Length: 343
Ligand code: PHE
Image 1 (tube, rainbow, N blue to C red):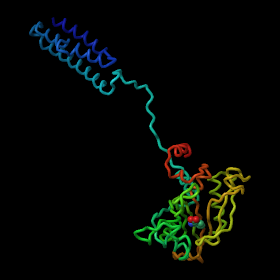
Image 2: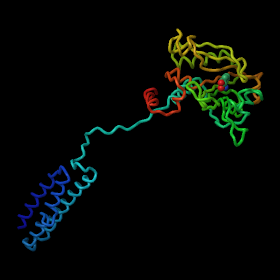
Image 3: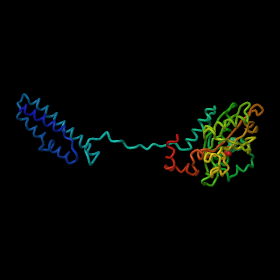
Image 4: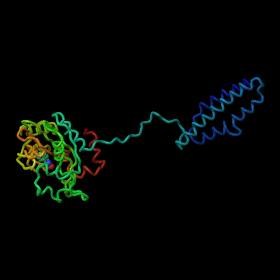
């Protein structure tokens, strides 16, 4: 009987191991067949009484092993059963996985990173400052007279709780903070968000982003300004992009100039983007006003400097043909997804 029992168990083992149920019903049938009250395991246990006393130990061991095998096997099906109500087939590891949604950089981040990279190659460091500023850093230090229209409530957001504070209207305030802390040579660019009290439309927004640059040292000339910005334009928009300067006015620079680039859309022939002039304005610039330098105890007889400031949205508009400023802050994924490959 012992040999018979061992052989029987061996056969059942094979059967159990080969068994792969297709559905819940088959799992239940398996349970009844092997583990039920009239099941095979019970029957085999009953055989024990026919086994001679000296072989009972060995037989008991075989039986227990078999019982554990059946139970473990059943357990593995039922856990599959819980995960998947329709099928207990083994998981097909060759199936392709689900896509993971991967985000992309915001177009303004892409543009900011590019601008930083270009100026870093010329030795400019990156400086940042607070978005909530005081009148001195935003206006006074920048040589804006007390009655300058930019200071008007119509143009500037003041903080209700403390009207001495305002939301910076340009990143020139960061230049002020840099000159407060450092002595020449100074070579920084200041990227950041700025605020102006404008009605929101396709062409204007109450906040946007600027990058300003400041270079103060001995013998800094207008030629340095031109060559620096020329280099920037070639790197940003492609070699062959032309630049031109037009005289302008800013309280913090003298002389001042606005810079245009040849229209990227029509190549200078004239189109809607350049209003048929062939040129588009991208920045303001000039030689730092001696009064601004003196505001920070920088000797304007010894040192000169240039400064420039541009709107990142404008650069982005020209580079990626974005024609509505509101798109930048609406966070519509249909817009954002278009820049996944633009890194
Ligand atoms: N601060 C100016 C603006 O916001 C830009 C500028 C910066 C012009 C530096 C000249 C020099 O429009």
